[in-house]
Length: 505
Ligand code: GLU
Image 1 (cartoon, rainbow, N blue to C red):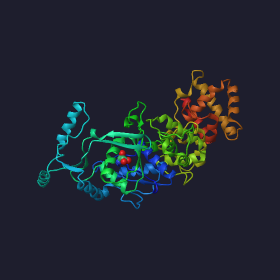
Image 2 (tube, protein in one colour):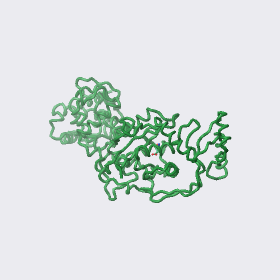
Image 3 (tube, helix red, strand yellow):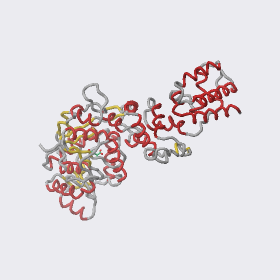
Image 4 (cartoon, protein in one colour):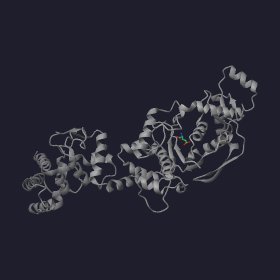
């Protein structure tokens, strides 16, 4: 047996769908586990819908996930070309073999005619099936119609029988070819359709395993007929269960994000996405849930791909992401978060490169000279780490650390218990305390704040809330005293004074 060779063959008609990413991942893992090759082939034969931009998004998405291949349109290799559209001549040569062997015929039925037949079948509750009208045209008739310039597709002559295979995932499956009718192999412009081109390409690229979604099962049966008609050894096939939404329907745009790109944009960590999709249709056979890519390569086996459909549950992805966020050192996390935020344009320059020019956050220009450094970002992130599920939440969660002024109005600052002027006076006392002691010099800010509350005759919580709002603009924030330490005296005083001013009017 030769080297195992796996492939994925995405069509560049849209961005990388989460289902395709899973197919890619499983093929990648299996190839690495077995010491084989992994090939990327772009199936761009639907000329009107295929776009090079999509090919790029697919490649970027796979790289982002950490999935690499050994041969592909971007890398080349000894089995190229790796774009189906560049293999047309090869497909035509193989098509000619089938024509010469009498497996095909020309079909002159018009699109309208075929559409009518399909509709009729639907109305009568039958599965659509080509009538076979052109199956037995005489050679003379075919030649004269072609000479007259009539358009014709090439159809495969299906002889009714049971076609079966031993699927890596599903076990023995079979289908009655009598149900299909003769299917098209090449369009009237001579270009082969997917079901034909894929057989030629998988064969010539020496693919040993074709692992793809269960939605391809009916194609596989047709492809098996092609292998047989061309006398080619067929690869092993494996069909993975589908990924469904919570209502057990095929995952679609309506269910939210279905493109890997969108998860990247929302600031999920690729290692969490990989871990999540690895378990969508595969399990290690025990209770383990956390797997790095290398661990997956070690434990992956195709016989543990499940046969039941997987339910895509974004809450589970959030959970995985949160676990990965908390597992990382804050330092590491800050660098990753900073890259994410910079890509979104939050910082006009990248603090990993120039450590104190964060002149722009969230569209609010701030003076660059005394603006925070990476250390400040790390300290702030440390406080938010417990709450983060994905980086897209950071601007909202962390904005208050970076803006110059907090806008809290009077009604937010005061409570029913204490009047505006009492609250103002209390905040003046907090500002005095901070000015005198310095937040970073206090052993615990809490101790000082509590004794100040005692002094004022306030309940501690009643004092902490207006301080919290003055400093952050929000009632829900990380622990107050640590937040004060991170903000530092200057910001704390500036914000307290602003709130005092606000309460003076
Ligand atoms: N181009 C097909 C798709 O994107 C791939 C089918 C295959 O793997 O053979 O669904």
